[in-house]
Length: 363
Image (cartoon, rainbow, N blue to C red; front, side, top):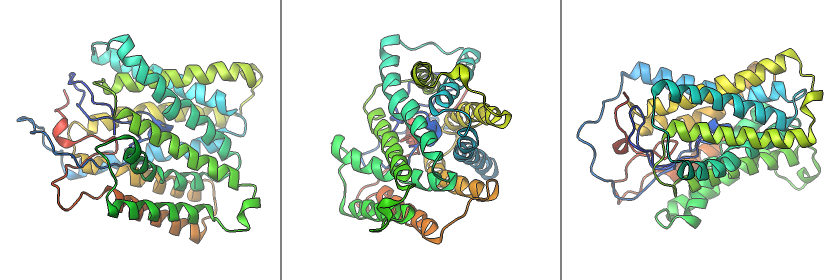
């Protein structure tokens, strides 16, 4: 996410499904979407591209999308004291997969070929599914949700670095290298890395969340290498893989039949699957059918802000000035690394790596 943003798979031109160049579907599906740039020459745009909706409607959709995905940290923080990490990941993945399957059935889309559609789902269901979900839940036992949201902002920085290593067309420019350094300085400020910080109890949790951002970034870069995929179908299969794997592990080590979650935790897990996973994935891909990709990519910036505000307002979590400054520095690094090269007429790319010229009108 799910890539959150984050590129995305090149989706087939199915009815109501935009075509796109590769993204990790499903963050924390949501949190997995990251902003990236593509500096290759753009193909000729289709002749019948649907114009943007009115500005007010688009910004309302973007705000709702950011609120849904940004609230995932809050919901996980509420649930994790009485719901073990693997049980939570299993419930989130399976419920979200069921809802997305319902969307596919209602839209009557043609199923993709199994061998072609399940291989990327297995990979993305791990690096952008159960693994980051479990690690985030574990870390939130030790950290505030606002800190988790701030560290999630480092995702686009990792995407740029990994793309430079693994994608020949995504070599770092000098300005992007500077942006990467700036971004990691911001991460250091959020964590509060000092000589005395290495004995802190919360340092391990913070480093785990940096690893979560790296995991989502791996999914985003991997997704740029796979062939045509239906967006909602891939998201459904990814969530299903994440849920099944987490369930198998939970049965082995967490004994879910002994779990006695509090009512608020049950509500949080249900909201996590529906409000913060299935519905925003559906909204995200619908937006790509009628909204410029550069606008949709703003969700990668808004999710951490929503997470910080919700943690502060709802959970009364403290905010340290250095952490907020670090978030601003990370945003500056993202801006530098994703800014198009001056010498190339670069197309704008969405949070999932989707170009405006690669989209079709929704049905």
